[in-house]
Length: 230
Image 1 (cartoon, one colour):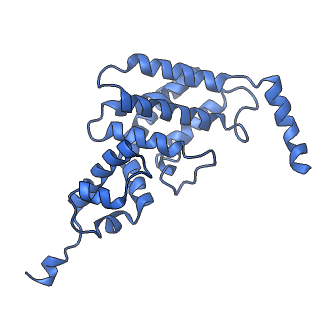
Image 2 (cartoon, rainbow, N blue to C red; image 1 turned 180 degrees about the horizontal axis):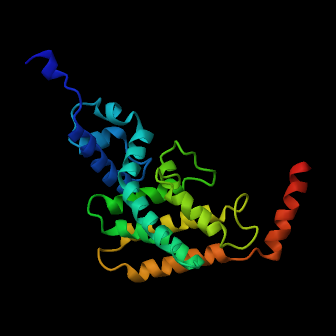
Image 3 (spheres, rainbow, N blue to C red; image 1 turned 180 degrees about the vertical axis):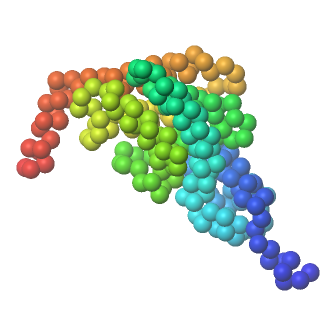
């Protein structure tokens, strides 16, 4: 056996095998609850450099996993947004269908769709800070096609005054809520018809975005500048 056959460059098959193993283990044990060594073992990879070669590190692996699934979600969302753009009027509930339905479709994706939804829920719920485009959750919020940005602009004009942007971040609250609920569904519910679940989730996300600012919340918002200056 020559040196060239002993130290083979990792193959594309290894790339897919590692992502498939990561989907299952990250979904089952949490994105911080499984070691990279465990993922390599589950992927049947003896070459310990395969993960580093293909992904760099844990975040690189998570980014690749998200990228695998986000394209089909973006295509579906763009299609719904294109249809809504052809209407004379768009309701907030109609707009929320463009957020919910492309993700719900992943529940019936046999190629890691349910696992992805559980992982995405973990990623968007890591903390309350603004998500950086370069981190693993970045592709969920800043997808390459811009479908999520299109959705943001659409609902911004349908929401009550003062509810968009900092410090309330209502749109991200709706995005996070939807991902968490669908992630829970992916983990706990069998395959089948998700029509009622989807419709209810559209209702709830629309209600979240439609909520007016209460007098108490407005008072607390008005007090923020004074608190920061003290």
